[in-house]
Each structure stands twice: as C-alpha cells, then as structure tokens.
Image (tube, rainbow, N blue to C red; front, side, top):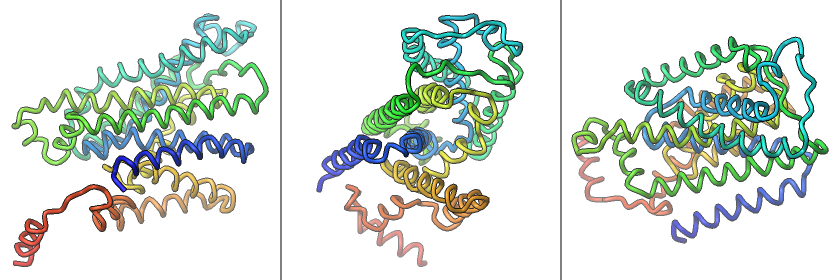
Length: 352
C-alpha cells in the first residue's frame, strides 16, 4: 500500500470513529471531545518540538490566550466586559440565541487570530534561545502569562469568568462542542501534514538537524521558526476558545493555562507516539487519553503515578516513541529508503 493510500485509509478510520462513537456511545461524548483536543494539542506541538527540534513547554499559553480572547469577544458584543466580570455582579446577564451563536463563532476565530499575533510578537525573542534554554523560557512564558491574567480584573482576574450558557439542552451542547473539536483536530492534521510536504517542511527539518548549516545554506531560520510557532498557535487559540465554552467557566490556572496537565500532556503524547512523525502524535494522543481515562476510573488516587510512570519509561527507555521505533525497524513501510552501502560503511567505522 502506498503512503498516500495509507494516509487516506487512516483519515477514513478517524472520520468514521469520530462520527460513529458519539452515536453508539453518547454517554462518552465529552470524553471523546477531550480526546480530539488531545490529538490537536499533540499534532500542533509536534510541528515545533518534533519537526523543528524546538521543545516548547509553553504552547499552553496559546490555548489560554485564545480562550480569554474568545470570552472577551463573546461577552463584549453584548455587555461591558468589566461590568460582566465584576465580583459584585453589576449586571443581569441574558444572552439570546442569536447573540450566543454569533459570539461563539466570532470568538473562535478571534481566539485563533490573537494567539497567532502573540506568537508573531513573542516568537523572535523566544526562538533566539536554543535547547533547554528555549524549553525553560517557554515554560516561564506560560507561567508569566497565567499570572498576568490572574491579576487583570477586566477579565475577572483569579475569580474567572462564567461563559455564556449554551441555548439548549446540555446533551446538545456536548455534541456541538464535540463536533467543533473533532473538526479542528482533523483540520489541524490535514493542514500541518500538507505543510510538511512543502519546502517549508524541509526547511524546519533542516533546522532540527543542524540549524547553523541550514542558515549557512541560505535558509532564513528565524522566519521559518516563527512561522512554525504561529501555525500551532492559531489552532491552539481556536481550541482554547471551544474548550472555554465547553467548560462553561474559565479561570487562569486550572482551565486556561494548565501547564502541569495539558501543557505537559501534549509533549508526553507526541513522545509516546513518536515525535517528528506524521501520525505518531495522533497515536500517542489516543493511547495516552485512553490510559488517562482508565486510570481515572479504576485507579483513583494512583492515576498520576500511572501517567508519571508512562512518561518516565517513555523518556528513559523509548525516546523514539512507537512509530519512531517502527519506522527504524521497517523503514519501507513508511516510504523511507535506506542506503545499505552507507549504513554498512557507518557500522564498520563505528566498529573500528
């Protein structure tokens, strides 16, 4: 089977699962919505961390920024945001159906745009760092943004914001947010996969392999690096907007900028499936989410131990991830051509 047919088959499986699972098991709609959110997070993180080699620990900042940007738009087109979020409850809130849907659609788009603009502004500074300095720097960025929002009374500060209530039954709301996250996850993967097939994909791979040589060859590395940070920011911002509405209430530390959970999960999922591969982050997200939900249900109190053990084993003993290991073992299945002569020469030199 060619790589193109294999990709189409996998997309077919994902779309079929995305359509059938909520119909066959409607009680698990919310869990499945989170699964698609996990897929989106892992896939977008891998563009920077896997394909370009810049391991970001702060992509969760885009998620939270998109969430708050969306909330400001959704509320701001009807009420004064400062009065709406005032601790003493300055106004009586009542969104019509039309106001809700208009605000939701505008908010999702605005969330993606604001997160992208933020990545564009902060990117040249952050991406001047390399290796562990970049990872720590992005982690500090996410923490700093969360703290700044916590102290910004206009958006409710640490008290958070109650989002507009979905105009319908709760089950219908779950289905709507499920569809939105499902579409965003598939769209993100299709777009990012298409980008990898262009010169842009080759350029960020060259940066990962040797940035100095890539720059010496004429590649404008800063431009490519910033762009490779903006694309994930766009999708993460929109996902944050949807998740904020799905939660119904947003606050800085646990919902909008949860660095210790979603912020780490997206890295762990890409590593588990195989970072730097097209389908590895998808596989890793699915497996990680299933394990997370099973341990949450059956190992209550030990769920963090189980997830921590998976991450440690993955990083210490299995850094290639599942698809990375499979690609090395059976390269022809992934369309990779191995130069046997070069390989034998390299092995002989290593033996010497």
